[in-house]
Image (cartoon, rainbow, N blue to C red):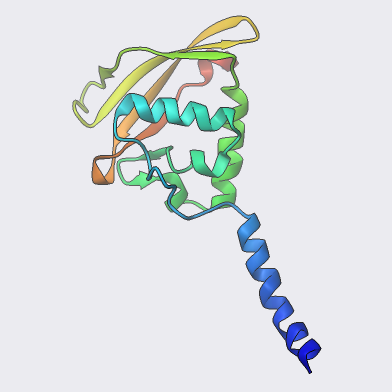
Length: 148
């Protein structure tokens, strides 16, 4: 009798186990985005180095919030995987912030000096203020690295 109960519960256990293995939609302990614009860039790059692709989706976003709340977690993870590979580095330095013309106070730009395999690239990052006064990485101009 007990064996039959376990067998009936097995499909539910598989669904729960599969959900636990997939990208997380739970808000990270540190919250979405970051408290300051430069902190969003630094957090994004640290998560990229740690290969925490779903977590990166909580820091990449728009003035409406993190991209992982808008798009499917699987799509977000694939895009963050691509960005993390392009941004792989031995070292990075975030420059002083400058306002984005026409978006003063709502968006800030940073030139990030990234060192990859002994070469240095200046990669522009744009951050944007979102819900709850949190900051998100809105754009990464990877053309500086890819040459395209």
